[in-house]
Length: 74
Image (cartoon, rainbow, N blue to C red; front, side, top):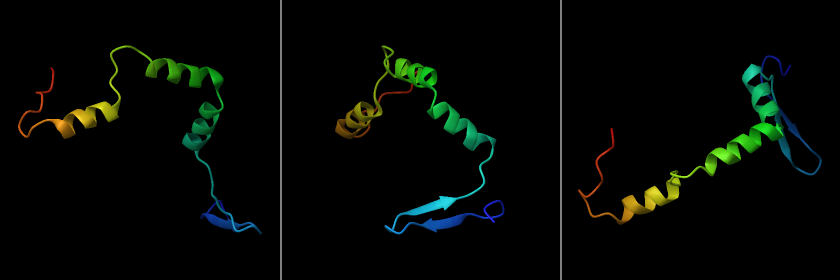
């Protein structure tokens, strides 16, 4: 049944879960999520110098006067 459509499962405690067929992408996401080597790679990438957190960019844009936005760099 779950091969053709999603199935909603309810536990006795009221929790709800969806059971559906997984494709290759779903399996790859699950495998990468369990990979300590891949997670270390992601963590390292986020700590590279020169990166600006999206929150900082949003804060700068919100506090800039109208028409004072920086031009995109080429």
